[in-house]
Image: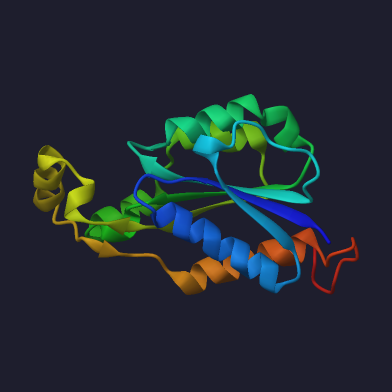
Length: 180
């Protein structure tokens, strides 16, 4: 049975929830999964069929422990298929800013993607609540006409995880129809 490690860095739990959902979808496809917080996973253990890495995005970058993990484990990660996901606030923005943000490149994240060359990198929207921001952040958030809420699109997350499951293949190394 193939092992897929799903590792995440989460600040308020939204990214962790997404990572656990991805792992559950992979398990539903017959893959053995391991979910871990990058902040407490100091080394990448050998023996995975694939790795899925995700981080919350703050200031256009992955959380520092996630960036450090990628840089430290780049050789180990390069030896297996990798998928990456970033969780930000695009859906919380007003429409004009939302479309601009969806098209914009975040240089620090782009450098990590370039370094790892994953099979795919996907951007999801997460959860934003007033208590996630300091006073200044809440003022700016309101001035930009942003919205608080849970913007996770579970159908989108499930579909992405299903694609990963197909690409990793059927447990035991046999690839099913439509797998690449």
